Image (cartoon, rainbow, N blue to C red; front, side, top):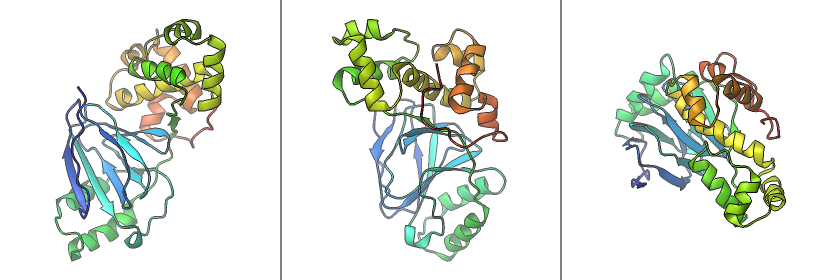
Length: 263
């Protein structure tokens, strides 16, 4: 059963939120900027129509007013810092991954331990943080769901079980729609074909597993690929880089346009 912990972030400069494996935080927004970090595990979030994986060496900047959600996973602790836009020099207009290695990680821990919102220690620490934060270029994958009830039923079933390999003929029988109708609705409402959408969903399901350090062969099977090589090929087509490069950070590239590359 999914649980939704109560989170009170109003008037709080920082929060340390313990999460169980069956917990998530549903879509919400707030006027403050938020910096999210999972120092001891991997955190999967959805924001700005994409899925983001926050691992030990990364943190995620979420601009104020951006709807976002925390997905169910194995995260034990989520650390969040909140900043009033008027007091913050960062002007990134979309979710941005930052490098949390070096001094940034310990500084984030230090800031979450400060209880005062405007004290001199926090002001000084924030100033150091602004000097240290560096954005990391990462490839993102879309998470758009179709709005049509029948197509959405198919999409949610695949999201629950990305291994499901049924095609549009079988899904059409399941939901009472012709394959052509489902194909047209996926294309019109997600911007990609059904096959491409399913590939994106499988890759999105793989990201937290890869971030948690699971072997590629195990991840491939968990998201519906028979071999590791087939999964790596699909990952490269969808993101432009290999899984190792994606999480290594050295070869990460800018986000590729949403399209029909994956097959």
